[in-house]
Amino acid sequence: MAAKQTYNVERFFQALGDNTRLRLLNLMGDQEICVCYFVEILGGPQSKISRHLAYLRSAGIVSARRESKWMHYRIVMPQHVGAAQILKQTLGWLKEEKPMQADRARLTKACCSPSKYVLLEGAPLPTRLEAPSCEVC
Image (tube, helix red, strand yellow):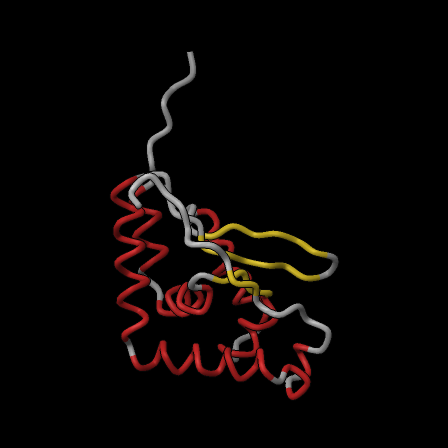
């Protein structure tokens, strides 16, 4: 008989406890975004951004998809009802914060003119997703 898996609440809150990871979640919002945009907007090394994305994946907050040489990331709602509610509230809160709004404005500029950014040459534009689905919504 298989043991019932429990949700790792500690890992979830640790994932939300870092400003870089919050900035990544803010940028994803309701989009699927190539990692190269994160590197360009946040200005950090790709390896550091990837480590933070891996942490978010291990917490069950983000999923990844490879397309050729590009890695795309999107938010996924946790199966745990309480975690999904907290994540939705956190994402709403981030939208109201001035520094997070500035990040999103930089993303919009980068998407509108990717040729200005060397790292974004040939990169796929972020893709708008349908509203995340979860048992809470």
